[in-house]
Length: 273
Image (cartoon, rainbow, N blue to C red; front, side, top):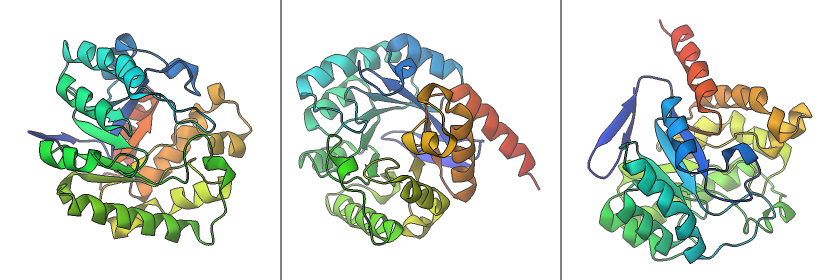
């Protein structure tokens, strides 16, 4: 059974991994069907999401920076709307202290930071103080430049070393080890071969000492491998996520919750001894 420690409670799942549903409160997400608000969040809950990830700044390759004020304007109404009807855990996809503070006060539970606490020095002490989980992701540069720097001598070793250093930073800031999750950052400053190497070896990061989130849903590497456009990448995503879970991922971040829940139910059945 997988577990996730929040501030004042622990959630569990009988499935092989948690399913995190994506809610993009943005006008420019690469997958237009994920651009939505409260109604889309409630739909994902009905489809079986274990938690939601709400973001107000697109981080797709080439995307532009969004101010904290605009991000708050986009994200907080969605959190407040969900909280009126559900206590589902809510993760916020942000790298800004002001956004996370406002989100926490509105009812959010988790920080999902693509900068692994690097971009805003106030985030780490805040998360330690309020005792919320953090997801630390690897990337190179920023979303507007990251695909211009995709050459590695050994992609697994470099990503693993970076994540290890960010875990040490988080621990030194006072964040509890049991509230740290890792994300190798598929599609963030990596080419197709590198992305699939990280998927193949996802269970090896930090020797499996920290739970792993894999965020593969409909990404460019899926399209490169299948020749499919974004709207037609569901089957490729399901295959990649299934492999990730079998290799050790504890959570998958997805646009298509219902289909992933069904896939994990089948995996659970065939894995019974």
